[in-house]
Length: 284
Image (cartoon, helix red, strand yellow):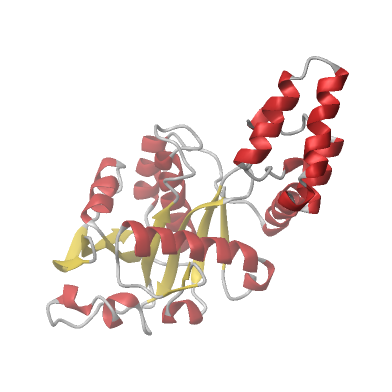
């Protein structure tokens, strides 16, 4: 599912943007090794303050699994101001009908392999479809995008090969970077949809998205869904002893030992072990 967050609605989706910036930090700062600014676990640069549009892919639980940023080329953008070495000294392309697409990323840790709905391939194609359709509906004719060779191969395999390139390929962190041109045409979108087997509307409206995020937050705050903290070795020992107790007398002996070690446990740990001595057994 795809949502678009821009200057008009970003106040509604601040938490979604935070999750997206965290994903960007893991991908560009960690996996790709780019020299990016990461603060508080989020990758945010100067172009994020220019009210760009973000096309964001979500899974069924409302987690951000993919994202890309769209920015006008008539003003400051990454190819002109950051990746200018790609252009070999030539002036950057600027047009009211051309957008720059950057920071394309997919959560390879959360998603699976293959082509099913919750796979990296599906999320990648869905995001490309969403970004192309969003641009086309906004009157954009072309997209220029800074990508690495891996993404270039992904585009070619997905019936979405660039129709041209600009400048040259240059080193960028652990990988190389190049600038590719894509036209926002029905033919390109149809070819991508055919490859991915995605024929439904990929977008969800704001109301649906807000309902999904509200449900996600409620689930996260539900104590029943919160993971137990890992057991300490001593807690595991008491779990084992309690499980091994065959009589009430043996069980009471274990409880007495827990009470005798009051200083060893926090009040919460002691209460849990006394009142629900078998509660941790599934973790041992």
